[in-house]
Image 1 (tube, one colour):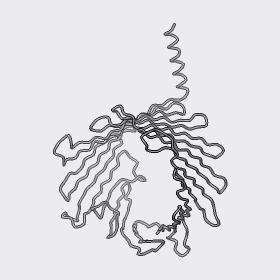
Image 2: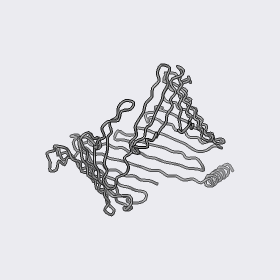
Image 3: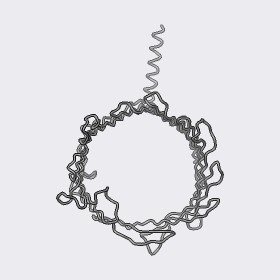
Image 4: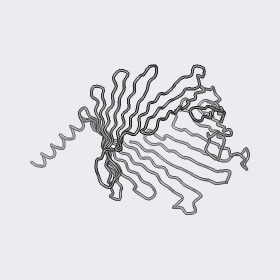
Length: 359
């Protein structure tokens, strides 16, 4: 009789869960990096792996996240999110595999009559934090309030930490955002911000302004925003010198780029001029051939980049080759690989092999 009762209970529970709609999904992503420069084979291989498992039942999702590397199991986290009546709830627990607690957080919120209330609780080590928020709008007026509790003392407690009140309101002909900051020492500052101040005779320039008051100071900061428009095929990159409040100096062209599509393949070139910071140092120019999203929708994609080093010893100053490819074997399995070859120094610097499995 007891066995029949237990069996019946399991069946009822299974049918109720099925009625709620259950799904079990996940992904396993791994990258293996080989560094040929290492003399020791063990040091030459690094591993980064993440296993993600999601279990969804009704409006709730339960998640497990496992991180692995070449040393073994490095991190474990569990998360849950869903709705409880009118409230949404999310929580995450982060654990060290060596049986050490790292962090626990809980967030919840509710929207009532257009007003959003939120609470975020975090416990990490010996520190406890609580953040409360409220935000809403009425016509042209918007208002938000954030209050923080908690500090970094060695004892779990709830001292008042800080509060931030943000109000957006139209004033005369401008939209102004006012931000008030208060902490346990009292009033800190209040700032008024206006963005996108247009200059009729300079359509490529707008100004952002911020006026801040503290107990001891009052500051006004003007920040220029430049928009030189869209270029067709060939792009020019600009740098504008500006100092103080507000002096605009030289306008310099610091780079030139080109992009062309040839069917499923895109060619991109970027050259950096003196004073520019567009290409990763120590290179000043890069050419890339890659598949494009518009024309290529097959299971295979790639990009090949050639970097040029100013004053290099190789033909045309070629200094570095980088290759990346991705092969979608099936809807649940993807294979990817990357190569980095420093031809300037005759080094095969990196080889990365990875895969992604989803279910």
